[in-house]
Image (cartoon, rainbow, N blue to C red; front, side, top):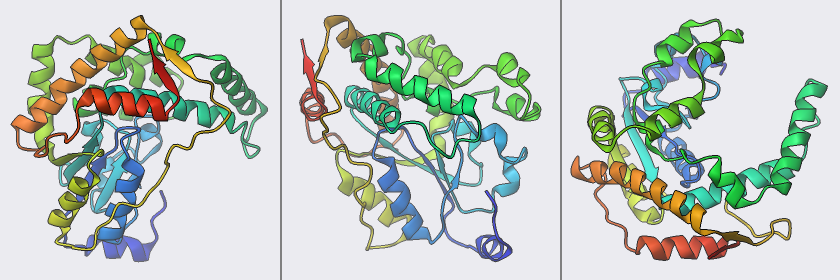
Length: 298
C-alpha cells in the first residue's frame, strides 16, 4: 500500500477508536469492511495470510493507520487496535467457499497477468474447478475451520524475517494450509487454551445471519446511528453450476468442522465477545443455504 503524505498525516491525527477486522472468508465480511470504512472515513490497510510477506517487514510501523482488515491470522494485526469479526454457520460457510472458488475459476485467465506461466496456472485452475465435484473437494480440505485465523501463529515473525523473494521461505515455514493442518490436529483442550490467550483481542463478534447485531456493534464502537451494511458479493444462481449431492462421508467432514468451530463460538460467548444467540436453528440455516447454493443432502 502506498499512503500519500496527506492521508498519512490525517491518520496520525486520528483520535478515534483504532480497529482491525478479522475477515473469515464467506462470512459477509466485504459488507462489514465497507461499513467500517464508511464509519471511520478511512480505507482498510489490507493484509492476508497469503501476502503478508510482501508488506513492510515491520508491520508495526503502520500501526498509526486506524483501520486494518484481512483474511489474516490474528497475530498479524497491531496490538494497538481492537478487533471485530463475524461468524457464520460453519457448514453453510464451507458450501459457499466451494461455490466462490468455482466462480473465481470460471472468470477465466486474467489478460493482465504478467507471465504466460501465470496465465497457464489460471487456465488449469479453471479447468480443475469445472471438473471437480464437492465431495472430492471437501475430502482434500478437512482442515478449513475458522480456528487457524484466531489462534496466534508463532511462525509469523519468523516468516517475515526471511527474504520476501526467497523460495526458501515456504520450504522453511510452510504456508497457511500447513498452519490449518496443525491447528486442526490440536486436541480440544489445547485449542481452548490457545483461544483463551488470543480471543480477548477481539472486542466484538456477531452472526452475519443477524446483520442488525453487526450494525449495532459498529454503532456502539463509533457512536454512530447511521450504520447500515451494504449488500456485497451476494451469491446469484447461474446455469454454470451443476446441482451437487453431498454424500455421507462429506457430511461427516462438515460435522467435524462444525464441531471444531463450535469451540470458537462457545469460547467467544463465554468471554462476552459474542453476545447474540442464533435466532435460527443451525440445521435450518444449513439446509436453507444448501438449497440456495444448489446442493442436495443424501
